[in-house]
Length: 204
Image (cartoon, rainbow, N blue to C red):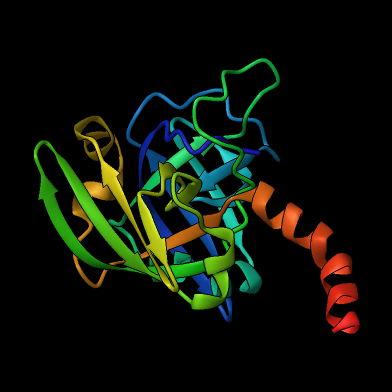
């Protein structure tokens, strides 16, 4: 479980591709010590497991399922990524509850300066729109963000200067793809309402 508050950037040092799977070696560009083998770490919002750990470096394996649902397959040596260690009990929940289970890949459609902040419009498969609401939460490449506006297959977010400087968002431009995870609570609520929706449909 994560919060969407990125701890810092990392750089992909190696991407060992074996068929539909990849093992990444990533070096943190900040003080990232005492990693525990087997712990979870979010790489651009995708939850991976630490296999080996050294001085600011770790390796993690991405399965075919993870690669098919995210943009991790496009990472190559030199790519920068957002990193976040798993939430510990007692930590402040400054963002929102993020599972690290990417729903889909979204695409940046436009970038608009708004004073010192920047507004980004991203588009994504319309089937996920039901989980996106105005002023709700969304994680893009692992960054917890507030939805400004949304509609079928799109949403907009405003990024403040501190977030721009601490994440990979500063490099986003039209055409860039990002990992998207919708609000976990919305998915649970919708799933729990399915039996009542089915019953309502039968009564019509």
